Image (tube, rainbow, N blue to C red):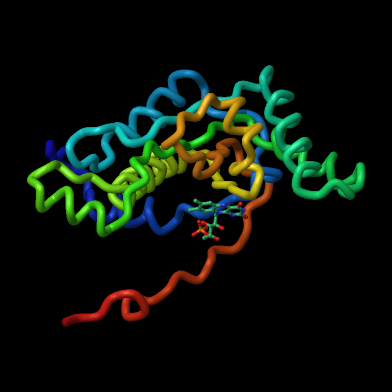
Length: 209
Ligand SMILES: Cc1cc2nc3c(=O)[nH]c(=O)nc-3n(C[C@H](O)[C@H](O)[C@H](O)COP(=O)(O)O)c2cc1C
């Protein structure tokens, strides 16, 4: 790694990581990142750990002029799940497609493996990069994006929900059999900041053998 004199990387990294927080998409407003900034943000995903360099994920941007397609899927998916959904609930579901200046879907490219199958393939000498590893790689790619967006002064939020499982959404994004829509990534200018979340203590998630 190049180390630039005069920059304390550890302090910078800690400040960046600990100050990022989820921002609800309704609080993400214009301006969103410029094309150049967006390129910086997206490039960060490529720096994610990727065992075997399989690129087990991809992202599909939903530009503003295509949001109505996503809104239609969100609204229809709700009605599929709940035929009694009220017009207000349907409007609310549709509205989620329009909430942040930049929106894209994160898609994991999985193999449909269980830990047992991964173990068998590893025993057989195959490179077994199972679904757990693939999802970790996607998570790292997403976090990289979020941190660069944050460093550029933007807020971000991840959103999921049952609509991501809908066949309608799968069709819109042309998901292949072993692809899974994991979450939407929303980026924009923060209209209203919120207090920092209490983070867990290290002792809550680290033990020792
Ligand atoms: C895969 C994924 C999906 C998420 N989906 C939602 C969501 O649908 N709605 C929501 O409010 N937050 C969602 N979040 C954001 C979390 O709620 C948020 O990260 C958590 O509250 C911790 O806050 P922080 O990111 O500020 O640390 C999601 C996070 C992840 C990792």
